[in-house]
Image (cartoon, rainbow, N blue to C red; front, side):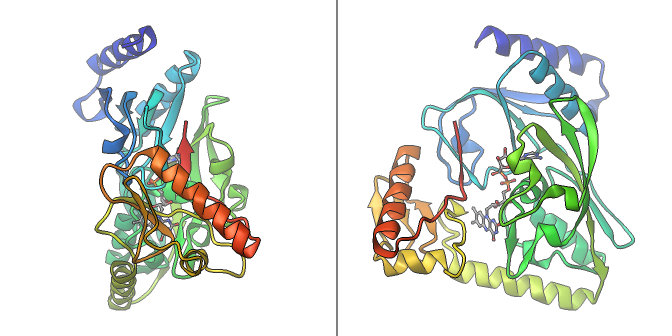
Length: 311
Ligand SMILES: Cc1cc2nc3c(=O)[nH]c(=O)nc-3n(C[C@H](O)[C@H](O)[C@H](O)COP(=O)(O)OP(=O)(O)OC[C@H]3O[C@@H](n4cnc5c(N)ncnc54)[C@H](O)[C@@H]3O)c2cc1C
């Protein structure tokens, strides 16, 4: 354990001494990234911290900033690839921020709530607009950061505002819908990692709960039929290229089933790279490069990576 990490542990233990039980900060030392990500790839992380409220999240982030400790926010780890030799720094997990409620036509969720649970909660309250998100394996925070979307909907359609902690200024800021600068898999959070999304307010509208339920189930069935959910992955590896289905380009280039080490282009959905067992980050990166080079050579198109490399 480095001096920085051992000082951090002391900070957390002192912090917890004076706290009520349900607002304590948990932590784990030397956890592997493979245990925190849907790709199930990646080496040891110096420390993973689990604040359990917005207040303790801000206090931890402020400590990390003040002490210049390298850190990174993580939701459900479903759109990231960590290095094989891990991450020399602190991962702050959104896991413990799990409050969710509805207020009239608004759904308000903390960053750690699974986005699928947001869709389910909306349906329960007869609110429509979140159906597209049912089955996306990310957190509410990660979904806003990535402007996650599917089946014609995306987070930018429903976000009214978000509450964020600005690690640079140490202030809490409310960000309006427009200020998010949403684009395809883009948002202000994506371009400015100093901003940490704490809570999202989504504006939905009342509808028929049976019809909402039916739509969600249809989307889930389509996912199960088309996506290789039986293997670890990070979903679609590449962004959509305007006018093309990236998965179709990869399929037409004859790359389905292409394998490097334990990483393979899925036979079921060519946009997915799956971990067939023991895949390393290096295997995945090489396969991504091979696909990009082949698509460039065959179609003169540069497909962009959606999965984020954590270095
Ligand atoms: C099987 C499968 C299917 C998928 N299907 C879809 C799909 O249909 N549509 C789609 O858009 N995506 C899909 N994805 C990708 C992924 O689920 C989404 O991008 C999701 O929104 C990522 O959320 P996360 O919590 O896992 O983010 P993470 O992977 O944990 O993080 C992603 C990025 O967001 C940052 N981040 C996370 N939380 C916060 C926060 N609170 N504040 C600031 N920064 C934060 C991280 O630092 C990182 O840069 C799929 C993935 C898988 C594995």
